[in-house]
Image (tube, one colour):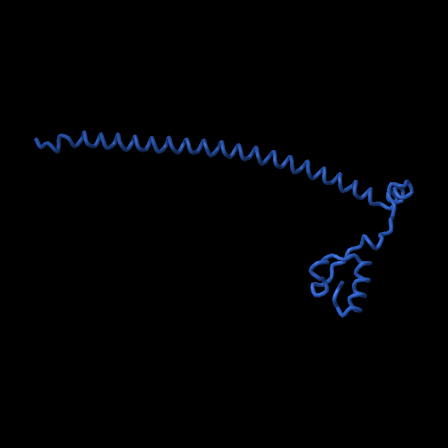
Length: 133
């Protein structure tokens, strides 16, 4: 008998065992990947659920704050605060007003001028030929 014909069934059996082993390994890896993906999906679903609950709570709290703002800015509430003395209108003095002039008017050392100082400074600047003292 020929040696190649004797070993042919054994060779086929070894190839079949190898193919079955490879197929089983691929199936096992696919199963592990599937389980891992399902666990990840579950974890992400829980995170999404918690975020949706937080969003719902924040929206309801925002609605409460909006209603408080509406109440606090109503004419009746402001009138009550003014009559109670907790809110008062105060006149702004000239020394507390600030004016930003155009870059051609502002001198490097002055930069920010009060409204009262700028009126006197512009008057003196026009009298001195455009230069400030």
